[in-house]
Image: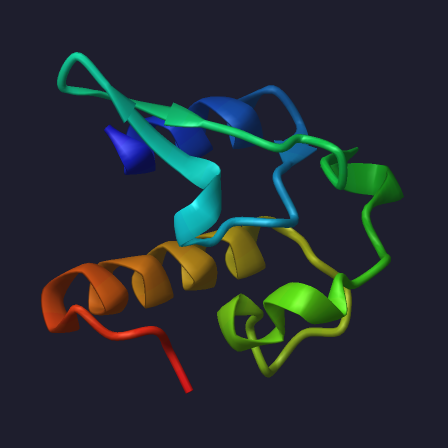
Length: 86
């Protein structure tokens, strides 16, 4: 569900820019994304939130599609390990 939600955003030209465990909600067995305050149209994305640095793709300064996908990977690691990253 999480991957599908991000894919939907990206297909509509939006990057979330703030994916972390506090912004993933579960309601009645359904995943919901929260906090779109940093979300941008892909062409406008560029500012980094330092609160979520562990979730950012270290290879990119600009938060684009690849960085949202990197953040999903970090979230999956957090889910499987039960620990916050870094």
